[in-house]
Picture (cartoon, rainbow, N blue to C red):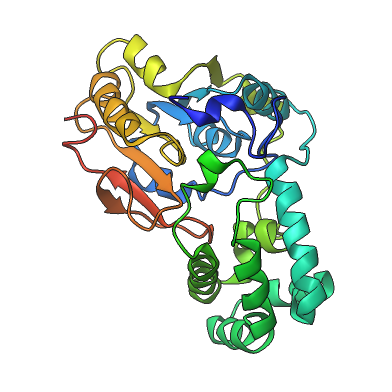
Length: 298
């Protein structure tokens, strides 16, 4: 399959599912480089990034290749409930397993950790109470095989993802105050950060977003030249074959105005298209970049 995200599943099986009930992207990356009040393209996913951009005054087109995910994001931003997607179920299993072998990962102890705002205290807590030998063994076992996760998506992860993920968690949890980091709370506790702004389920922004069920490359090819002022692509290149990156770059050159910023995330340590790093508090990504102009919009 040219684009494995078309299956609409993270795990093995045939029936499409809501893959992401929430998003794990820090929209500060987009807001730091997007021009004001622009016409922008976003991957719909669970709607969080599209909502943040719409709230900032952008005219957003939210595109997703999964009809199920697109319908969920649209309903959520119209005021519907936030549901538990496949990603959240997998995270819940991982948190329970971690709590069985390391007490610091249990909900009450993790809540105490996430209330910290002092980076030195967070660093000491991580090393003394969270990054324990039992956790390292558990994570190595968990990432030893794909298990229920689809292999075409699993292959997009870096080798020894257990070590990679521990390194990313340490960098994020010792580089940003936990108490005000929504993505730390969402990932490590499965709850929303008390200090975070309200979530995207608000009908007053849904009307500012156009929803399109399409492959992002095909959509970019279909719009007039330079139609978008900017674009954010989530991690659409994690999973598809290498040729898809070249197709996407060509489509971006057509659909995004010259010089228009394009943001790409990836689980890889090196992005499949070159770019400059952007701010990120979300703990998971190997790279969050603004693509170089010769790749997108030149």
